[in-house]
Length: 303
Image (cartoon, rainbow, N blue to C red; front, top):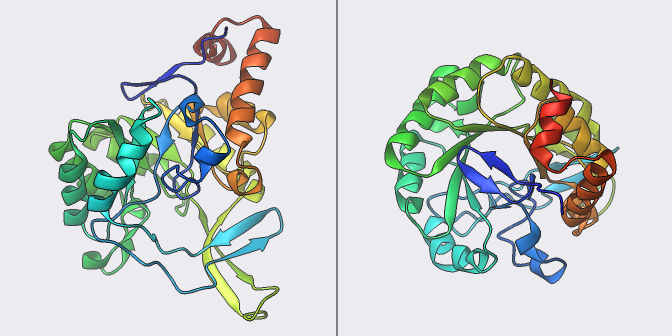
């Protein structure tokens, strides 16, 4: 057996593969297709303090080699997640990473307090791609000072590991990464979706436009470059890479570009077993190459 384990901000994952937030719900639907205990971790849908109904339909459209979503953070709210969703995920004995989102700093602080010490939760993934309504709609993750403020205040309210999820919708992500690490983030995850626009091609809204977040294979080359930029900056924390991964070679490209773990997003909608396939193929790949562990291979390719 190959040891696929990896340490992300003090949380030990049995392998480096996990779902991207927003593409896995809270795991219930995927349990019909796979053994969730085989995942490196479970990453929840973006969670807010209060329940959200999300945006009106249509909320997504397929594009060439990708999709645009405009979901609007539909979720049952933090209280329901603690009481109804986390108990389900605890059954599988894997780290649970709760993705939290807010439109004010105080909302992030409330969720940090609410999720702290909830049994089974190992980390918070702080989604700083949301607009801060008290700062005129400026996205937290586009401003180093705002990003630092929210991560620092969350850090002060929880003992859980903190992962900062960064937006790619900036000229240079390195200063933002440096700011959130200084504020207490123990790992980075990226990239989130890219702002995009497309015409709806079918259905009752055919011909109208949708604007939202672009994901899928079309963004992978850009995501790889951003992950590589952060790796070259030698920031001293693990990087969780994502953006268009749909096969083992895509995963290997992210690892070779500097990612220590990966998240699978849009590909889950195409094949809900894709994460398990990549885990199995990664193990066979390392075995063929003569390695006994994933971390040994990472050190070799980065030497």
